[in-house]
Amino acid sequence: MNMTALFKNFSYTFLLDFIQGPMVWLSFVIFSVGLIIQTFRLLNLTQKKETRCLSPDVDFVVQNALSKRERFFRRLAFLKITVIGQNFCMVMFSFLFHVCLVVTPIFLLGHNVMLDTSFGFSLISFSENISDTLTMVVLMCGLVFFLRRLFLPRVRIISTGYDFILLFVAIAPFLTGYLAHHHLFNYNIMIILHILSGELMLVMIPFSKFFHMVFFFVSRFKIISEYSMGSPKRSWQY
Image (cartoon, rainbow, N blue to C red; front, side, top):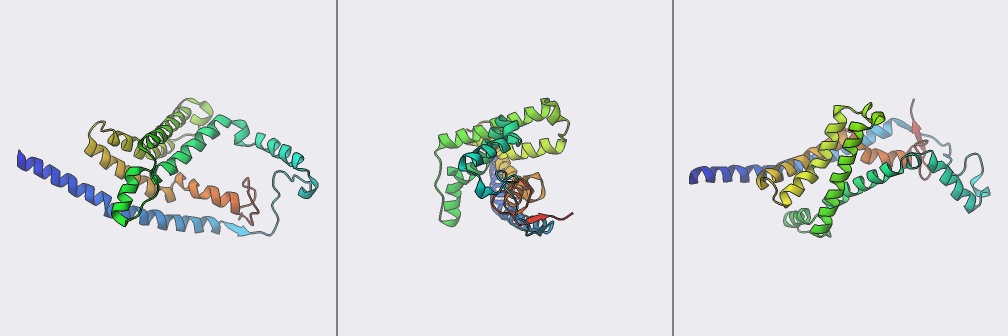
C-alpha cells in the first residue's frame, strides 16, 4: 500500500514537473512564433496606401471647419450605427470579459509567486478576493455568451461546435484554477487541468479565432475602413 502511494506520488510529481517545465516553454515558443508569423501574414494581405482615411467626425466636411460641439455630436451619431449603439449591454459584457481574461492571469498572486521562484522577479499582485471576483466575472460572462449562442436565434444560426469549443477553452483555465484554489473536487486533478488548459489556450491563440486579440489592434490602427483609429496607411489587397 505504501509502495502504491509512493508510486502515485512520484507519477504526479513527474507529470506536474513536466507540464510546468518543458510544456510551458514549448507553449510560449509556439505562441510567440505563431504570433509573429500570423502578424506578418496579416500585413502581407494589405498594401500601403497614401489616401488619407477620414474619421467618422469628418464625413465630407473638412475637420478643421467643425466646432468641438459638432464633432462631439457627429461621433455620437456614428456610434449609433456601430455595435455599441446597437447592443450596448453585450459590448459591456465583452469588454469586461476581455479585460478580466487578460489582466487576471498577469496579476494573480500564485502566478507571480511562480514567476519570482523561477526568474527572481514578479509583478504586483491582486489580493485573493479581487482575483476571485475577476475570475467570477470571466465565468459569468462566459455563461452569458454560452446562453446567447444557445438560445438567441440570430446568434445560434451562425454558431458552430467550433465556437463552443473556443468558449470552453477560454474559460477552462479560470474554472479549473478557481476549483483548485478553493480545493473543490480533487486538487491534484484540478491543478493539472488548470495548467494544461492554460497551455492549450496559449498555443491556440495564433491559429484560431483567438488571434483577434492581435488582429483588433492591427486592423484599427493600420488598415483603412476598419473603424480605423489614428491615421492608418494600409488597405486590403483585393
